[in-house]
Image 1 (cartoon, helix red, strand yellow):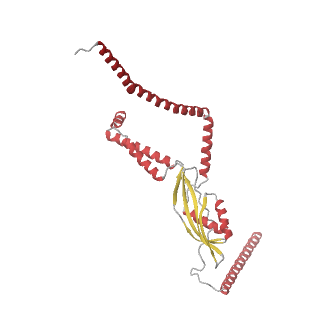
Image 2 (cartoon, rainbow, N blue to C red):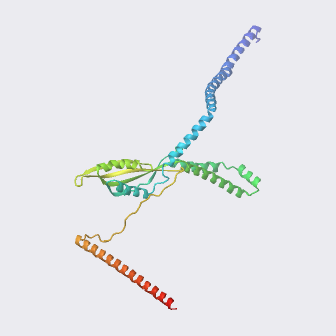
Image 3 (cartoon, helix red, strand yellow):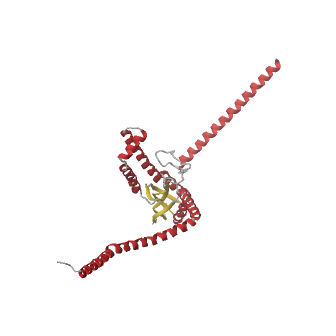
Length: 317
């Protein structure tokens, strides 16, 4: 069957239209969509570029602001003690008794709790990061690295593996130390049982706020005691500390603390016996002082007599 020239032209025109349609759907349309995506990305990149150029113009300003902010952070962190120990809670309770009309019968010393760190990580996340660093760096050791160490340093394969393992452990330890020097806030909650007046309870709030360390009153439970006319209850105090900052721990000064007793059995003695014992003790002390004075006088007289005899012997010679 022969195809006429007219049919050939129609067929060629149909193939041309089909090729044009296919080119549009499979080539031109895809390229236009890709160009549209690129154009939208260029818009966001241009906005970011303009932002970076604006920041580059104010580089000195941002650097100065960063330094000032870092200085303020360090000053804020240095206001916290480096640690809180049991003796801090004990001395705090003792000082509250001495300064205010308050009797503290019991002090419950709390454990140090993690609150937050400057990098926003928790203690669990830091431990996970340390383990992950070891795993990732251990997995990154390849045969090529071991071979390179063997060739460059001229050592055996076992020594190369050992050296690479030491470098991995050193890098992980460095990351852990960097995390340890990140300012981290801790809280210790001490609970005290007290008996005080209402005025002393109000003064205790101001007293805690005036301390050098960072501490707050977490909660207070107090009730009126009709037998004494005072308030009895418990008070929970938050004592904050911060590690990783340029701060130090200062030992609390407990002052002079009396200890021991004249009566180890704690019996009650009559006032007359106490007065007699005091008088007898005073008389014994006076007698001892008089005897000491008399001995001193006799010694002085004896020394004077010896000096006189020596002088007379010298004149006779």
